[in-house]
Length: 502
Image 1 (spheres, helix red, strand yellow):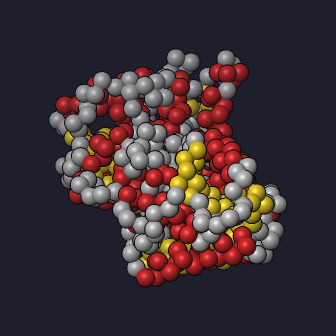
Image 2 (tube, rainbow, N blue to C red; image 1 turned 120 degrees about the vertical axis):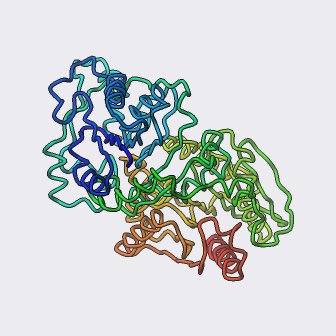
């Protein structure tokens, strides 16, 4: 028998686990759905002093009153913060920590930093709001829950119940820093990722491969992962599947990333084309690959994806994919440009957009570049940066290209503004040529944004050429060394350069 302590996200209480708890008990497990102070049927106990430490103490007391010697702590969304705090204080009582579609807060992090709801996050960061007398954050209305994560699979009656029973969240529970001593660092951990909310084990694996030191602990054999094909509220949308996954996690099951640790990261493997080394000039955050031609030449600016953690070496402009593309374009008579921009966190899209805009202007000012013949080529998580030029194409922009791009913010990103929503911006693209390279084996959470974009482009009669890569993966240029993949790169480059020269 396993003793589970289930801790849900903000505004909710133990009631939200009703169906999951029933399944676990039917399987013979002991289940303790937690209701934290100020939430659920304990909302009347809240006051201005109710903070994250209050919720941590709630769980410590619950753990201390469970007879089973060790428990599995499950934290959903905000709930992972008090879960980690309680595990830090009672590590000897914890058999496993389960992050249920939740982040990885560290010592000193405030819950608002991982908050998916951008409206609430901005309110909490507003100095005027911080000094106000309202010490509670109102619970979302029925049409506001999606700001905090995908509602995929949640039945209408469950959403109505969620809205009816939700309680205001005490402000200090979101603004007080989490304090951890590291006492629970050896406790086994499982991540349960909800793919319809824009997270998956494959995405985590890609981030780990970038070398982010904060994520290297995920290579520990005691860390496992499960994917659930549902939205951010699996206890409402998929209780049977969630109960089975939680039992599997308690048994130590799940996918491990440790087997990948010794391999060369996929983004640093060789480019699929044999491109002769080209002359390269480094100017600040730019690298220019120059063609063997006289006079000003058109230019293609390659915009890498992300977020790429700060400090990762080598930086993207030295990755084989971008060196390969830029050198190949230079060999075809255009200036290839790679740029390191500041997309290090999801909150950095504005900064990255400014970096890319400044890079383009620097390129256009170079006397070896024809300033009226520019193409911008976006990759992966850099795709949202295309929205601004799609919404208002400048006269000098002759083509936009995108390869395995994210073309609408993923639900878990918390980007409320349409500034970085290409699937909306394409409605204003007019006759701007767009070359889109799509891989057959795309990550599902990204593929859905591409389909959304293509549907909007079709409605707007935008000029989109789609180049498909059969059996291609996200990042195929260093993964799939097939003739079909090579031809996709050649065709995409031909199409972009044709627009530049036309």
